[in-house]
Image 1 (spheres, protein in one colour):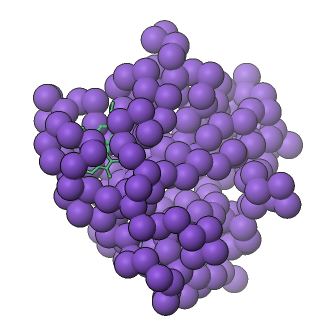
Image 2: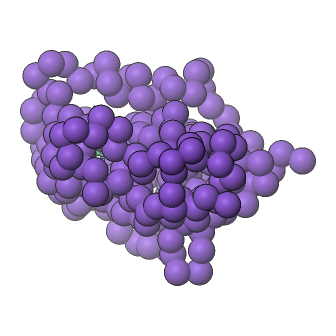
Length: 208
Ligand code: HEC
């Protein structure tokens, strides 16, 4: 039984393409790749503020689901655990959003990034995901409107990401950096126009 039904408009990678296309040469430091991939910023807060209306933790949704079982990979301590056998393709769904009926207006666009903080400042590491782990889509920015059974009526983005523990992969801990946003930013200015709130989660990768 497929428990997770995500309604993905167009190709799964469209969100990130739109994001990257929006980045002209002058703004190569903007958007999720600004952390680690295009520059040494530690997280989104190096440039963006977190003063948007999405503060209520009871209304916030940041979840990672196992695509096959539909189950949340959230642990009791608030971290997420992604277990994978060596060589196995493991697909998870990153679900970000705001519950229906909550006080603040729904976010319009969510942006996120999975990154190993230890690799951000290493100019020799082209891959900023956990060492030895392959990943197809570690970041995206996406307009809300996806649906996930577990969070009906919420204003959501949901997008799959597939990881694979390679021969030299070890257990690792990475971060999921997330921003809920609304409104358009001003070119070259991360603090004008766009309202946003920043959240961070710990994600453990475990070789089974
Ligand atoms: C080095 C600075 C910097 C960092 C770090 C950064 N951004 Fe940005 N971001 C910007 C700037 C500047 C803009 C404004 C748009 C432009 O100049 O192209 C922007 C714009 C955006 C936009 C919206 C653009 C639009 O179309 O209105 C989103 C969404 C966004 N950033 C998300 C993130 C997220 C999520 C992170 C962290 C994972 C992040 N950014 C990290 C500088 C940064």
